[in-house]
Image 1 (cartoon, rainbow, N blue to C red):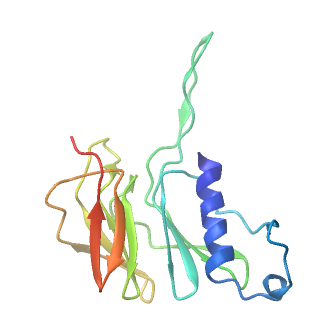
Image 2: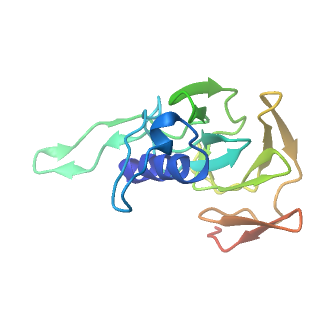
Amino acid sequence: MRLSAMALTLILAAALCIDSAEASAPLSPDSWVTRAPMQVARFSLGAAAVNGRIYAIGGNTQSEGGDTLKGPLPVKGGITGVNEEYDPETDTWHFKMPMPTPRRDFAIAACKGKIYCIGGYAADGNVTGVNEVYDPATDTWEIKAPMPTPRAYITANVANGKIYIIGGYYS
Protein backbone atom coordinates (compact mmCIF):
# COMPACT_ATOMS: atom_id res chain seq x y z
CA MET A 1 0.00 0.00 0.00
CA ARG A 2 2.95 2.32 0.78
CA LEU A 3 4.31 1.79 -2.70
CA SER A 4 0.99 2.65 -4.29
CA ALA A 5 0.94 6.04 -2.50
CA MET A 6 4.44 6.78 -3.73
CA ALA A 7 3.51 5.59 -7.21
CA LEU A 8 0.47 7.89 -7.19
CA THR A 9 2.67 10.84 -6.28
CA LEU A 10 5.15 9.98 -9.00
CA ILE A 11 2.37 9.55 -11.54
CA LEU A 12 1.05 12.99 -10.60
CA ALA A 13 4.53 14.42 -11.04
CA ALA A 14 4.90 12.87 -14.46
CA ALA A 15 1.41 13.75 -15.63
CA LEU A 16 0.93 17.24 -14.21
CA CYS A 17 4.04 19.27 -14.25
CA ILE A 18 7.39 17.86 -15.34
CA ASP A 19 9.25 20.37 -17.48
CA SER A 20 12.79 18.99 -17.29
CA ALA A 21 14.83 18.15 -20.36
CA GLU A 22 14.44 14.46 -19.60
CA ALA A 23 10.66 14.81 -19.48
CA SER A 24 10.62 16.59 -22.83
CA ALA A 25 12.32 13.63 -24.49
CA PRO A 26 9.82 11.46 -26.35
CA LEU A 27 8.56 8.52 -24.32
CA SER A 28 6.62 5.56 -25.53
CA PRO A 29 3.09 5.33 -24.11
CA ASP A 30 4.11 2.26 -22.11
CA SER A 31 7.17 3.76 -20.40
CA TRP A 32 7.78 4.98 -16.88
CA VAL A 33 10.36 7.43 -15.55
CA THR A 34 11.75 6.89 -12.06
CA ARG A 35 11.84 10.02 -9.88
CA ALA A 36 13.21 10.70 -6.42
CA PRO A 37 11.24 8.97 -3.63
CA MET A 38 9.54 10.88 -0.84
CA GLN A 39 11.75 11.39 2.21
CA VAL A 40 9.19 9.73 4.49
CA ALA A 41 7.60 6.56 3.14
CA ARG A 42 3.94 6.37 4.08
CA PHE A 43 0.47 5.36 2.95
CA SER A 44 -3.06 6.77 3.40
CA LEU A 45 -1.65 10.24 2.71
CA GLY A 46 -3.05 13.12 0.69
CA ALA A 47 -1.44 14.44 -2.50
CA ALA A 48 -2.23 17.70 -4.28
CA ALA A 49 -0.58 19.90 -6.90
CA VAL A 50 -0.28 23.70 -6.65
CA ASN A 51 1.80 25.98 -8.89
CA GLY A 52 3.73 23.15 -10.52
CA ARG A 53 4.69 21.48 -7.24
CA ILE A 54 3.29 18.33 -5.67
CA TYR A 55 2.57 18.11 -1.95
CA ALA A 56 2.47 14.81 -0.04
CA ILE A 57 0.79 15.45 3.31
CA GLY A 58 0.05 13.33 6.38
CA GLY A 59 -0.53 9.61 6.24
CA ASN A 60 0.63 6.56 8.12
CA THR A 61 4.25 5.42 8.46
CA GLN A 62 3.38 2.19 10.24
CA SER A 63 5.39 -0.80 9.15
CA GLU A 64 5.37 -4.46 9.99
CA GLY A 65 2.84 -5.55 12.58
CA GLY A 66 0.49 -8.48 12.18
CA ASP A 67 0.83 -11.98 13.55
CA THR A 68 3.26 -14.76 12.78
CA LEU A 69 3.40 -18.35 13.97
CA LYS A 70 5.67 -17.09 16.76
CA GLY A 71 3.40 -14.19 17.84
CA PRO A 72 2.81 -10.55 16.95
CA LEU A 73 5.44 -8.55 15.10
CA PRO A 74 6.51 -5.17 16.48
CA VAL A 75 4.91 -2.12 14.92
CA LYS A 76 6.94 0.99 14.06
CA GLY A 77 5.70 4.44 13.11
CA GLY A 78 2.14 5.67 13.02
CA ILE A 79 0.00 8.59 11.90
CA THR A 80 2.05 11.61 10.85
CA GLY A 81 1.60 15.23 9.85
CA VAL A 82 4.65 15.28 7.56
CA ASN A 83 4.35 17.69 4.63
CA GLU A 84 6.73 17.27 1.69
CA GLU A 85 6.94 19.35 -1.48
CA TYR A 86 8.18 17.80 -4.73
CA ASP A 87 9.86 20.00 -7.33
CA PRO A 88 9.70 18.17 -10.67
CA GLU A 89 12.23 20.53 -12.27
CA THR A 90 14.97 19.50 -9.84
CA ASP A 91 13.53 16.06 -8.95
CA THR A 92 13.84 16.86 -5.23
CA TRP A 93 11.63 16.69 -2.14
CA HIS A 94 11.68 19.33 0.60
CA PHE A 95 10.11 19.25 4.04
CA LYS A 96 7.51 21.95 4.64
CA MET A 97 5.51 22.98 7.71
CA PRO A 98 3.81 19.83 9.05
CA MET A 99 0.04 19.49 9.21
CA PRO A 100 -1.17 20.74 12.65
CA THR A 101 -3.42 17.71 13.18
CA PRO A 102 -1.60 14.56 12.04
CA ARG A 103 -3.99 12.17 10.32
CA ARG A 104 -4.61 9.65 7.61
CA ASP A 105 -7.41 8.81 5.16
CA PHE A 106 -8.55 12.43 4.89
CA ALA A 107 -9.87 14.40 1.91
CA ILE A 108 -7.49 16.75 0.13
CA ALA A 109 -8.22 19.42 -2.45
CA ALA A 110 -6.28 22.24 -4.09
CA CYS A 111 -8.43 25.36 -4.42
CA LYS A 112 -7.37 28.93 -5.22
CA GLY A 113 -3.67 28.20 -4.65
CA LYS A 114 -4.15 26.54 -1.26
CA ILE A 115 -4.45 22.93 -0.09
CA TYR A 116 -7.36 21.85 2.11
CA CYS A 117 -7.02 18.75 4.32
CA ILE A 118 -10.38 17.73 5.74
CA GLY A 119 -11.48 14.94 8.09
CA GLY A 120 -9.76 11.58 8.41
CA TYR A 121 -8.43 9.53 11.31
CA ALA A 122 -6.49 11.44 13.96
CA ALA A 123 -3.50 9.97 15.82
CA ASP A 124 -5.80 8.91 18.69
CA GLY A 125 -7.69 6.64 16.25
CA ASN A 126 -10.87 8.72 16.25
CA VAL A 127 -12.58 10.04 13.13
CA THR A 128 -12.30 13.82 12.97
CA GLY A 129 -13.97 16.65 11.09
CA VAL A 130 -10.98 18.99 11.34
CA ASN A 131 -10.44 21.27 8.34
CA GLU A 132 -6.96 22.75 7.90
CA VAL A 133 -5.67 24.72 4.93
CA TYR A 134 -2.04 24.92 3.82
CA ASP A 135 -0.74 27.96 1.95
CA PRO A 136 2.35 26.93 -0.08
CA ALA A 137 3.22 30.59 -0.75
CA THR A 138 3.75 31.30 2.97
CA ASP A 139 4.40 27.74 4.24
CA THR A 140 1.68 28.22 6.88
CA TRP A 141 -1.45 26.40 8.05
CA GLU A 142 -4.79 27.87 9.07
CA ILE A 143 -7.66 26.14 10.87
CA LYS A 144 -11.04 26.51 9.16
CA ALA A 145 -14.56 25.48 10.20
CA PRO A 146 -14.77 21.70 10.76
CA MET A 147 -17.09 19.38 8.86
CA PRO A 148 -20.46 19.04 10.59
CA THR A 149 -20.14 15.23 10.45
CA PRO A 150 -16.64 13.89 11.14
CA ARG A 151 -15.67 11.32 8.49
CA ALA A 152 -12.71 9.38 7.10
CA TYR A 153 -12.15 7.71 3.72
CA ILE A 154 -13.71 10.72 2.01
CA THR A 155 -13.15 12.38 -1.35
CA ALA A 156 -12.89 16.10 -2.03
CA ASN A 157 -13.70 17.72 -5.36
CA VAL A 158 -13.62 21.36 -6.40
CA ALA A 159 -16.33 22.92 -8.57
CA ASN A 160 -16.91 26.63 -9.16
CA GLY A 161 -14.49 27.58 -6.38
CA LYS A 162 -16.19 25.41 -3.74
CA ILE A 163 -14.98 22.18 -2.14
CA TYR A 164 -17.41 19.29 -1.98
CA ILE A 165 -16.80 16.39 0.41
CA ILE A 166 -18.27 13.12 -0.77
CA GLY A 167 -18.79 9.75 0.91
CA GLY A 168 -16.80 8.45 3.81
CA TYR A 169 -17.10 6.59 7.05
CA TYR A 170 -18.21 8.00 10.38
CA SER A 171 -18.50 6.45 13.81
